[in-house]
Each structure stands twice: as C-alpha cells, then as structure tokens.
Image (cartoon, rainbow, N blue to C red; front, side, top):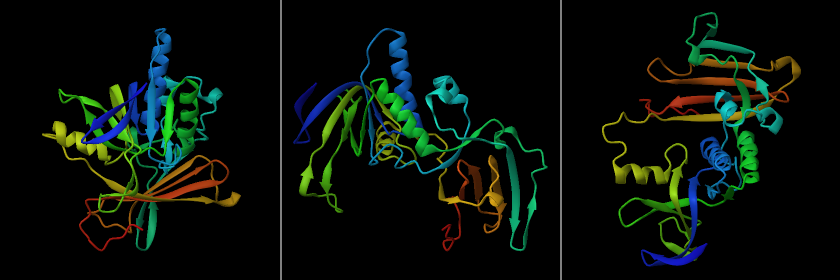
Length: 284
C-alpha cells in the first residue's frame, strides 16, 4: 500500500510494512528469516522488507570469516541440506609471534576458549549472506538491493516511523543535482537497524536518543584482506593462523590472519586497531 506524503516539503511515496530492516548482512537477514518463521508457526502473516545499499546482497560483506555455527544451528537446523556455504571445518589453530628477524610458534600455549576455533567453519561471509537472502525471499521477505537508507522518519510522538531510501542525485556538497530523485519512505511498526560498523542511521539514532550516554566508547579497527588461490603444497584445508607483533610495536593492537578453505583458497589479511599513536603508520 502506498500514499503520497510530504516530509520537510519533499513529496515522497510511502510503503507500509510490519518490519523494515536496514542492512542485508548476517544480522538483518537472520532477523528477517526468524520473523517469518515465528509468523508461520503462529499461523499469521507478517510483511518484512530488507534494504541493502550494495548493488547486490553480499557486495559489502568482504570478510573471509571464521564462523561459529551455533547461531545458524538454531535458526536453520538443516542448514547443510539447504546449502548454506559453510565450506570448510577448522582443523587446526596456529598462533605465531612475529619479530623483525624471525617468528615463534606459540600454538602450544593454553589459549582461552574464545580464541580457539574448534568446531567452527571457514567461509566467505558474502556467499553465506547470498544464501540467507535466497531463503528469506523464499519465505516472502522483500529484499531491495541498491537502496541506501539516508534518514530516519519519526512519528509525531518522536518514535521511529521508518526510513527514507533510494535518494539519488545528491552532489558532493549535499545539494540536489539535475538528476535528483527524492526516494521513498518505508514505514513500519518496527524498524531494525543492521547497518554494520558506524552506520549513518545508527549515528543519527544514537545522537537523538542518547544511546551512547554513559556507555563505554566503541572500539574500531581496519581490516585489509586479499583472497589467494595457492598450489596444493601450500594449502592446508581448515588451517587458521593468527599472528601478533611485528610489523606493529607493543603499544599497537592488531595482527594478521590466514584462513585456508574451499578450492585452495587462502583469505589473508591484516587488522589494525584504530587507536594507534603513530600518524605515519600505514596498514596497507
């Protein structure tokens, strides 16, 4: 159902849903699937829309990830039959300290359980999201890729009414260009914000409702990753390796990772905590 409405002197079309989810990542898609499951179990109908700023689901999910299957076991107990691509079970954890002149394998040390990956899977998180999106659509979820949500819409009492999506033609100065399109409003009984790190709508809501007041500040990092396909002699399926130390100093958090999975693929990358002090440091 749609109707013409005016917000801040901009006339937009509006669409009504029970739930609007911003972000087609693992959290947003899992929420959409779970809502449909609960509605089906209750014998009722629920309308769910998922907005994704990327050109397709998974376009902004670039992580080569080690995934704990406990969540997906609860959401989709038959996920293997459904073809969710958790490709390679972790077979070995390796931890190495690097120095400027060599390395030390410390895998023999008693690491805490949360650092160990026994029972987890190595996978492309983008491919996992694409599979979840297909399942969600089969349940009746409407997914709109290429639709970035740009602002929150509020009810008269100040509660969240929905979001504005699909605004195009804004120039670098924030002005309307010749190809400007005002977008569309999506209204919902519940609006789920699953944008990921430093989402623009999340920041608006944090400021408006004081969600970060009296809370510990969030911690951020940057990750750089490449995907290599290596010869058999360099490939150990299920190996996860993490390093500490060089090229970082003792006051800078971060390290590298290598995950062996799939068809001789190695996800290799470096993570750096963004509270580093050296302004000349370049993780790239």
